[in-house]
Length: 109
Image (tube, rainbow, N blue to C red; front, side):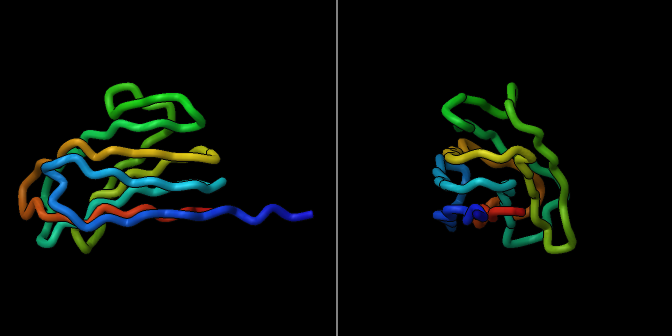
């Protein structure tokens, strides 16, 4: 019998200079994406949250975070760990270019 992921993800459009919460319930890889309205030449995202009931933050992650940018100016963080529940609070964003951003999550198989 196969397992069908329960994907219930909230994508938030906001200026992430103020706290933004992203919630998800899934069993898959997750990517948290911050897309600036302009070209992002440098940036950092401060994260707090929980994976499988264990808390983490960007200074002490329990998951494997991979950060990178793409041609659209997106700054992406990928949690390379299956989990049932995820809560992430984006507590701050800074970098060159526009700080207005869309914060979204995608379940990755």
